[in-house]
Length: 199
Image 1 (cartoon, helix red, strand yellow):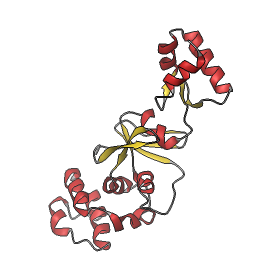
Image 2: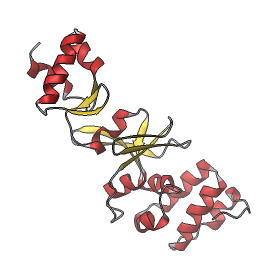
Image 3: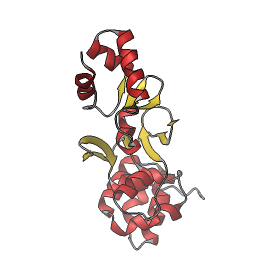
Image 4: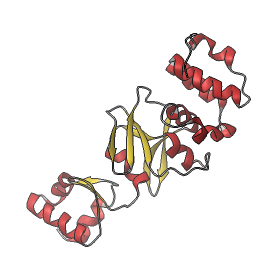
C-alpha cells in the first residue's frame, strides 16, 4: 500500500498507534518502517511510545490519548475566553488515574459529567461546560486564576452541578465564590453544607 494512501487514512484520526498502522498495512515490520520514515520526514509527531499524530496540537489530541476524558479547568475556561491568563498546559479530567503526558495533565475525578462534544480543527473533542470547568478548578489552581470567569456563567447550572456532587467542601468553596461575586445562593445550597471549617 502506498505511503500517501496510508497517510490519508491515518490523518482522519487525531491519534494513532503502531497497532493502527499495522491494521492498515497488515505487516508489523512494514508498519514500523512506515512510522520510522514518516517521523524522519517530520510528517508525524511522536507523543509517547508507539503513539503518534499528524497534528502538532495538544488541545486536539488530549482527550484521544486517555479515554474517557474531557478538557476542563483553566484549559476549558481559556478556550471560552473567560480568563485572561493563558495556561501553558492542557488539563483534562478522567476516570482513570492522574498522569502527565508531555504538556497534558490528566487529573482523576469522581464527577464525570458536565461536558459536551464540540467540533475543533475538524474533529470532535470533549470539553467541560464553563460552569463545570470552574468546579473542576477547585483545589487545582488558586482562585485568583479563574475567579474572573464568574462574570459570565449560568448560576443555575453551577447549582445543578453542586447539588449533583453533594460534597460539602466543594459546595462551600464554590458557594462562597458565587456569593462573593454577587449571587445569593446560600438557601439553595444549605442542605449540602456541613458546619466544619475549611480553608
